[in-house]
Image (cartoon, rainbow, N blue to C red; front, side, top):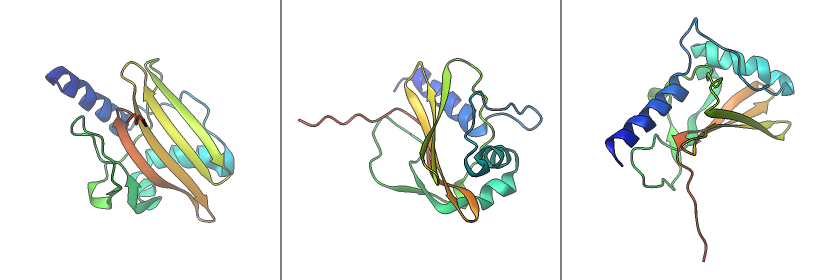
Amino acid sequence: MGQLSKFSVWCMLLFVVHGCRHGNIHPPAVSVPDLHRFDSFYYQFHTDSMFQLSNIIFPLEGKPEPMDTLPFLDTYYWSKENWLVHHLPDIRDSIYEQVFQVIDSTLLREIIFHIPSGYSMERRFSYTGDGWHLIYYAPMRRPVRVEIN
């Protein structure tokens, strides 16, 4: 991967992971589902770091930060020690698209697409009697395409 491509990838990662700074918080550009008060949870999750850490089920399944162009096929787990706090994504720029997919009344999938590059980030949230929890995280990465012959 060329230097410019690596730089672009790191810029996108920093944008998504670090989002807005405190005091410069913007509401999501799309409607956040109000299933079991997910909208309230989503806002607090991104504005209160202690709340965020207490609502992630560690070790958290997902994918690691992409370091090269090779696809990562094995299961990866994020630990509390290597977690970077997420802030509200500022996706008002038209090069990003945020999608919430309601799987059922207890499972939501969020995907943020970087339209020009085709890269995307995925998070999954699960609802239990204790409230919502982040249960999966895959940072901004190129989608893996598998061809079966």
